[in-house]
Length: 361
Image 1 (cartoon, rainbow, N blue to C red):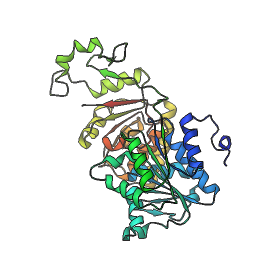
Image 2 (cartoon, rainbow, N blue to C red):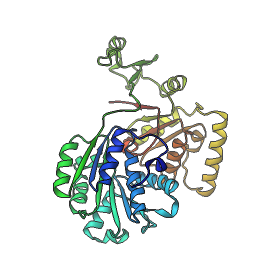
Image 3 (tube, helix red, strand yellow):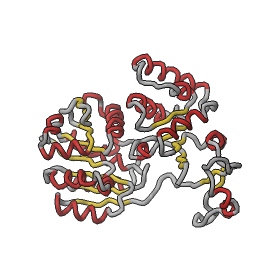
Image 4 (cartoon, rainbow, N blue to C red):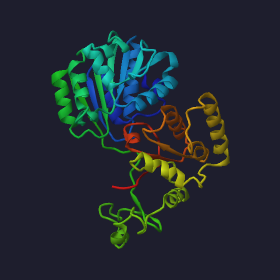
């Protein structure tokens, strides 16, 4: 049995200990815990455990962007030679002990279709991690997760991770029926409590009252005027004002969801007069951006580079993958202070933000 203190130099939470104990008992595991609580640590333990046994792990994700991020993270943690990637577009080090892949690739490997030819053998695979497994509830793609579970060989442990799956008990019961002994590990403890605010045209105020159960009375007085927010005229709150409010209250970095590509690009233009980074951060940004542009001169588009030097960026499907990867890396490093994004950024990509802003509901 592995010494946890040697792997993780910090105290683990109870649900993490329970999940690790279930893995050590050779059970499959469903982990349902809030975002930021440490679910990924259980997946990392499954990797350490498999490598100690001389075995392999497949780590599946629902998105190519998330797979690319996990590739970077795991290379840093386990070493570049130990990690591979399969996304359909790319096949990197596919025989590595740790292979990150989209869930569709794993499903197709089980089916033995031609797409599986870009995959890798299931031999010596001890565990498969199904990250963001709540995608099983997706009407269009959910069958991919169902089929992956149904056709996965029973001697391979499955580790399903999610923060938002609604029917975790039902999922666990079904997994036990179709695959084998499965433990449900559930936690509702949120290490970082959520706070809700609302930005009017004049100030940023708490959304809830002191009881945290009712709307702040101050907002009720402004309800009628605010109903028309976002229309032409009528008290629209400027993006620059919102960002300045966040900066003054030390609430950056922030992800600002706008839900349209054009809206994200326009938002970058609207706040381009702001600078959100310190002198030291400006120097660090210049080094990394200049190096990136020297290596990838065709990756940037008009209007993207200037704001990035000031800690401002957009992130959506219309941006080249190389540039999106740079934005993600700089945000993770704390050098990007606000990123205007569509909903694709909310799908499990690890972008550590202090604040999330939703432009409209």
